[in-house]
Image (cartoon, helix red, strand yellow):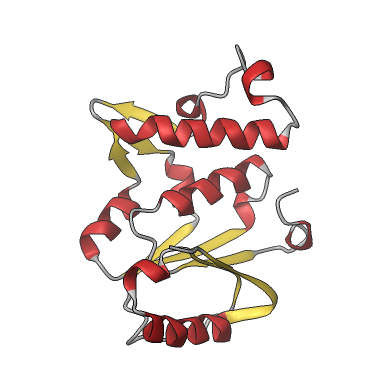
Length: 173
C-alpha cells in the first residue's frame, strides 16, 4: 500500500502548495486511484502564478509531455507489482492513455474524475494562511519560488497546517 497509516481514514486531506502545472498532483491522484483511495482524497492545490495555475486546473498538456508521464507510470506499475520493467511489462497494457488520458489533437487531457478530487486556489504563501489541517503536504516546488529566508517562514506555515502524524514531503532543488 502507498501509505498504510492512512488507508483506514474516511478522508485524506492533501495540500499541494505552488502546484505549478500540476504534474506531481496528478501523478499522486493516479496512484491513489490505483490503490483504491481516490474517493477518500480531498486535495487543495495552490499557485501564485495564475497562468501556470490555469494549466493545472484544466488538466490539459501538450502531447510532447506524454512520453515522460507514461514512462513514470510504467515504473510505478512495475514497482507495485514487483515486476522487471524491461522483461515483464513487454506486451502488457500499461499505456497511460488507456487509463487516464484522452488524446485531442496536439493536446492530452487528463481524466476528469481525477480533477474532481481537487480544489484549486490562487495563493501567495508569504501573504496567506490556511486554518485547515492536512494529512499530507507536498511542498516540492517551494524552493523554486522563495529565497531561503522566506522559505523557512513558509515552511512554518505548512507545519501549522499539518495534522498530528501528518506527512510533510519536501522537494529539493
